[in-house]
Amino acid sequence: MPAKVRKRPSGKERRVPFLLGKRLMLRPLRKEDASGPYLEWFNDSAVCAGNGHHFFPYTAQDALQYIQRAHSSQSELILAIAKRQGDQHIGNIALKRINTISRTAELAIVIGDKNSWGKGYSKEAARLLLDHAFFALNLNRVYCGTFESNQPMRRLARFLCMKEEGRRRQATFKQNRYLDIIEYGVLRREYSLRFGGPP
Image 1 (cartoon, rainbow, N blue to C red):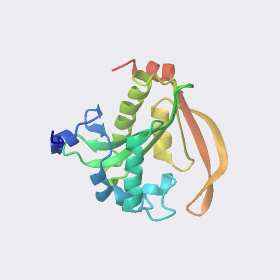
Image 2 (image 1 turned 30 degrees about the horizontal axis):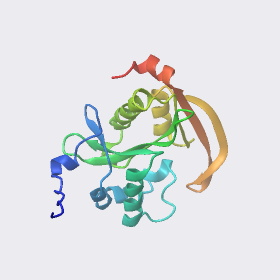
Image 3 (image 1 turned 180 degrees about the vertical axis):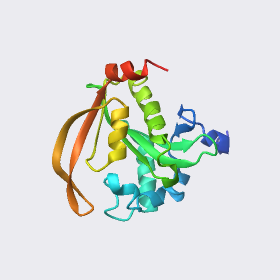
Image 4 (image 1 turned 90 degrees about the horizontal axis):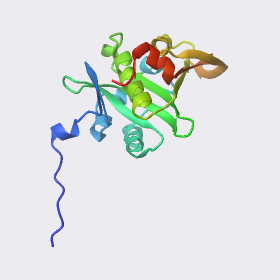
């Protein structure tokens, strides 16, 4: 009996979103993302001012390895942030260190497309992912840590009802100075009081 040949998925099938918002969709990362603007983001000092990148060149191989990890990890949920209209890849968002016993996870996000800064995309993407974290994955706490200088991430944490829980003094070195890392966290009940229950 001849082996079955798997049909290559159509473009439409490859672009099926995982989570849908008004303007954005969160979808799995694809190999072709590594050859798009994604690669430029982590070689741009402005994009990386608030994260741990831009110490060494970020290559296409680095991007492909990260995408492969995103597809195989059982402790992380890593998604592309794309505009619903046109599927433009503008950033990434993730739940990292998912702990199925303590029901916790760490939020990480980057809006790499500088033309998309200041338009509320990080808020929409984070709401989509935290709704999923609390009401689909049944997590109880989501947290993040960010540089004291990263005002956009600190504003996002406060928007998500995260409380400042601590400060790691001079825990990172960036742009020729030592910076504190500020820790934030939100519980499911606190998030629900602000944004309501399951969508």
